[in-house]
Image (cartoon, rainbow, N blue to C red; front, side, top):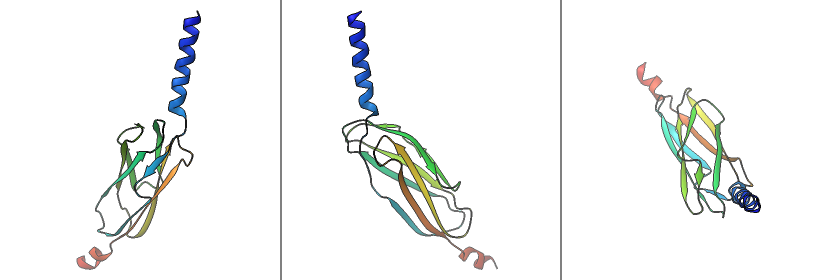
Length: 129
C-alpha cells in the first residue's frame, strides 16, 4: 500500500512539471508581405522555440479571420527545441489586410499574438479591361 501511494505521488509530481509555465521565443511577431497578387495563397511558417525549463505545450491556435488557416506541426516542444505553426493566407478581398494568429500555450504571456499584413493587388483588374 505504501509503495502504491508513493508511486501515485511521484507520478503526480512528474505530470505537474509538464503543466508548469515555460517560455516560448517566437522568431517574428509581425509578417508583412507587401503587395500580393489577388488569388495567390501565401504560406507562412511561424517558428518558435522552447526557452524554458518545462515542456512547451501548444493548447490551441486560432486566427482572427477565415482567410488564415493554421496547421500545427507538433503540440509539445521540449527545452531547447523548435516547432512551426504553418499558416496559409487565402486572400478573399482586394486592398490592405491585417490578420492575427493567436498561439495558446503554457506560458505566462499566452496567448501570443502574431500579426500578418499585406495588400492584395488591384492591378489585375486594370489588365483585364
